[in-house]
Amino acid sequence: MKNEGQQLELELEMFTVEQEKMVQEYIERSERDTQNQIARAERDVKFLLENGFHLGYHFENTLKTETVTRDVRLGYGDERFETEITVNTWSGGVYLLYDIVTQENGELVIKKHSVSFGITSDKKIESYQIVGSSRAVKPRTILDKIDDKNVAAKEKLSSLIVKDLNFNVAISQLNHEFPTATSVEKRDEWISNGNYRNSYSKEVIVVKFANDSSIMFEVDYKGEKRIFKIYDVEELKMTNEQKVERLVKRVG
Image 1 (cartoon, one colour):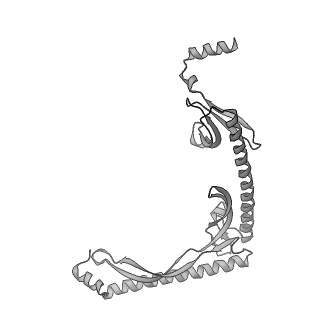
Image 2 (cartoon, rainbow, N blue to C red; image 1 turned 120 degrees about the vertical axis):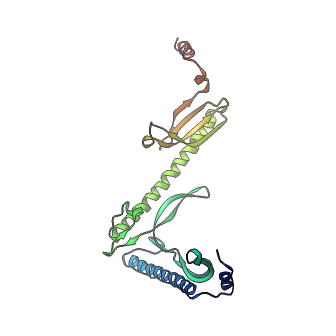
């Protein structure tokens, strides 16, 4: 907490020698950090271009520098003080790019995804998200892996479009087959197999009825639908004796 003397000094923008030193060191650190980031970006861009990478396709440079005025706290304990400082700062950087499938305004699209990377002393590249490990590899290997990811994204998009079409057709058919259903909709169903590792999420179509009974359908890659699970409320209410009696009537 500032005492009256400290407050008056700061209001008049007057500092002690020690405070002035702290302010100057803060400004110098910010400037040094900004210049280091500029130099790193220039080095990374030069290295990538020299090794066959294309700006906007294989990588992006989003580094921006600006001069900002901010309130900062400096010092420790009773000597801690707050003041307004104008410094040079930065944001962004140089990132590798590859294609991913995502949703935008409810539509499946392919977009560029940016990931960080490092350049080793022996002119190799480290990028866990592209390589799948922390192993440094040659630039050519990174280019090949980016191309593989881009091809995989196109194939995934095509597959998802076909799958969505198959589900839409199946939903339309089920609406026609079960006119008394209260709802027919696609949803993700969690399939539990005893433990989390063996469990998974599955896209299904659920046909629900007024008594809360439901039929769950799965749809394969050809668009063919099959019953996956039946939830019969009336059957759940029955005793074993009632189930046996019903079975005897049906087979007898």
